[in-house]
Length: 172
Image 1 (cartoon, helix red, strand yellow):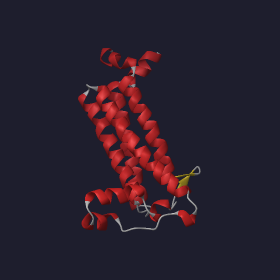
Image 2 (cartoon, rainbow, N blue to C red):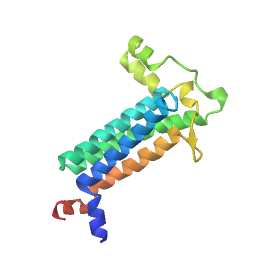
Image 3 (cartoon, rainbow, N blue to C red):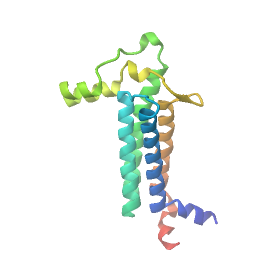
Image 4 (tube, rainbow, N blue to C red):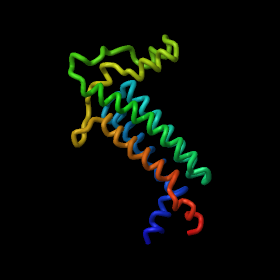
């Protein structure tokens, strides 16, 4: 019985479950933005980009059905980038108010007026708006929950990519 359950969440089905998880997380982000009125900061937008990248890699693994280590590895790399970005935002949120960086121009202004390299640099460093905590659940901010999700999905991607039972999926 254990082998059948493990085999069920391996391979294409497992990658599809990862894609659905990413899609649900993105849907919740858009709910917070458009229904609850919480505007995303620059670091939040970068984290969304990493969730989209993971969604694409999980979906490719589910649709393609081959090269699971490649798709799992790419999903893991996207999760690692997202975790680094979320960690930066959690760190900014933990700073005392007098140590928080000044708020800078918004993303669209930077894209129109700065070179791309400078825009990306300013986005990653974040600003005062990235340190604001507008929503919490069980004591964690949105950035904190994003970090938890990136770590969990990254470990899941590695498990899918390198699990020994994935070769039995087609034989069930």
